[in-house]
Image 1 (cartoon, rainbow, N blue to C red):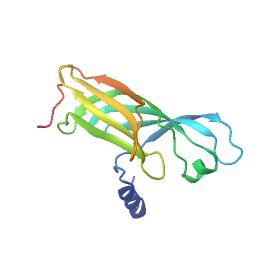
Image 2: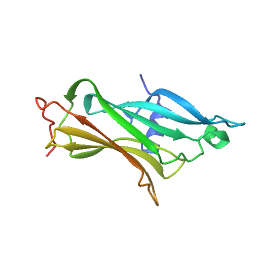
Image 3: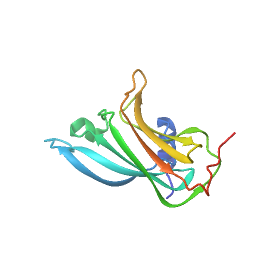
Length: 159
């Protein structure tokens, strides 16, 4: 899929990685709104850009109503993550011990949902942590998942 120049510029301005595109799997309404979309829980899939064969599924709240419909609402800091091996695992390059693999805004300014990959070399396992942060104050709410990698395929580490 080819990105248009305005979309590319917008992604750069918002600090969004260009590869961080989600595939929406589905959603459920949690509260009816008279005006604008309902409040929802959305489930999206993200492929790890550095590890072929690993996909992370993230569920999180999306605020509806007028503000949500206009993109001005601040979504709740709660999210859940489950990452799974969905095919043969191939590493595109050596991985750092800790790296942000996905980030998306949760409000117009200052609040982001983040997914960080950590490598547990002793157990040959990839850990994925999701949390949200704010410029002034982040949230301690987080979710963690692990993807064990077959010992026959050691995880290449950077540096």
